[in-house]
Amino acid sequence: MTTIDPDAVYHFNVIDDTAPEYTITQQIIQWIKTNLEGLKDSNHKTIFGKVNYGYSESTLKSFGSLPVADIYVNNITYGDDFDYHNPKELHSIIICHLKGTNNHTYLKACELHDYVMQQFIGNPDFNELEGKVKKTFITNSEVMLNPGNKKWGVMCAFEITHLLY
Image (cartoon, rainbow, N blue to C red; front, side, top):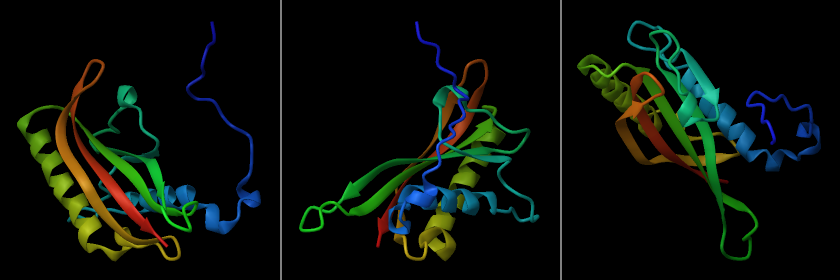
């Protein structure tokens, strides 16, 4: 029987060996994380208690009374002509989780959904990443109840497409 440590720490370092034009996934996921961490409400308070790399449906947790966002790269699509080996689009997913299932929590999840949607549609900082992403758009989004282990919550989920240079 093999035991898997979910919190394994990896010690390899290939960042210096990866040419800048190939650091697509790392730069884009860091860009999304920075953008989400910088979101403030009308009172100039941070919206998310925590923004994580990666996502595990079984371990979604809220951070105090603030929502948590989990982001990950879903897949990369490549060209289909002479430059078929060059990435053309990167698809990412953002999951925002709020604790609770009452009417107030669900309404707040809808409010958060609309605000994050507005950022991706109207905020240039969420739309373009110089030299990497020329256009970003939401391809799908949802607001849904999320049954957890012992507690329920509400999630907003966004499927995002990034058109690459």
